[in-house]
Length: 188
Ligand SMILES: CC(C)(COP(=O)(O)OP(=O)(O)OC[C@H]1O[C@@H](n2cnc3c(N)ncnc32)[C@H](O)[C@@H]1OP(=O)(O)O)[C@@H](O)C(=O)NCCC(=O)NCCS
Image (spheres, rainbow, N blue to C red):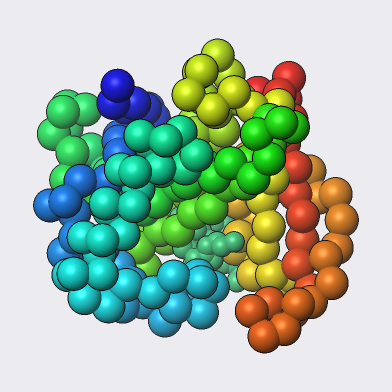
């Protein structure tokens, strides 16, 4: 089953279409990963077409096993079927199936930031993930970011992920404190 989600156009931003990553997205993926902000905040950096294709294969495997549900975010210039190249990514990754718990992750390409793409895409994915879908039944979604990643914190707030706690730094992987935001079923 292929899950496709849609977001209506906003006053100053086009409609969005979210679908699983596809092999032909590899070039756009590598281009997006050249951005220093992505390199700063993401643990995964894709520099070659081979790495990007392997990463896309991993996303397909995540859908097949139901443990990682990730979406490419595409802007629609006209009809919803007329979507262009991916400009963002939203992932829902299972962390504890017994507690129906998952974490969300996201990025947008440098050239499209500040148009509400991350927050509109995260909102539709959060509603879907906490809704009636049976691939990964969930009661709670968590969102973690470094305290000084202010744009990510703002996206969390806009999507009603409540700030629950400050996480201690865990160098070397996480040299700064973090924010744990949570959205629970029923908030959807
Ligand atoms: C975080 C990220 C996904 C936001 O993408 P986006 O498409 O620009 O998000 P939106 O337009 O929906 O919202 C961004 C909000 O952050 C705000 N913002 C951006 N930079 C900011 C900064 N330095 N300080 C405070 N707020 C900031 C914007 O003003 C906007 O809020 P507003 O709508 O109230 O004006 C994008 O910056 C990104 O890809 N960063 C690198 C990867 C990353 O950090 N991922 C999250 C890891 S936890």
